[in-house]
Image (tube, rainbow, N blue to C red):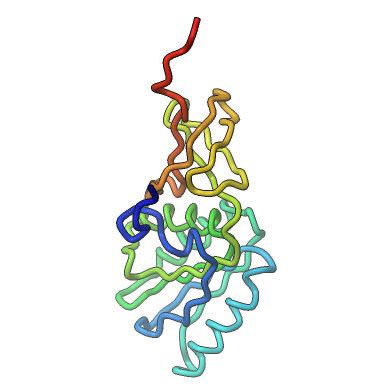
Length: 180
């Protein structure tokens, strides 16, 4: 039985690609786009923000599709100058967005200061509860993946660690009694 996604820690944008309008409630914005697939969203957001205020303070960071370090460095740098009214908008593959969102949360950014546009949702990063290794793979929720660390078959559960930016995986047959 699948739980109502709204009752889980999995953001809707991590299961269905989405293209929300820009967050116009801010006064200062940081936009991070992961890879070429984020470019249309970055352009749309920039146009929307500039249309409201031609002097809008927008910082745009385009990083590689999997360049978590560059994205985190950009957000950390911009946070150093952030004042009331600062907003973070992230566009790209859901797994990359989850990781950058986790970095922002660990840095003190509130959920209502962030907006995410996921361009693809087919790949998930699953953190193994047994060994702690992260496995990046194409998997559905309730799917089973082999942990790249301990090799256990992991059930991809309806839980995302907000501070790790990854889905939870636990041994699928942990309670099965082995026949000898």
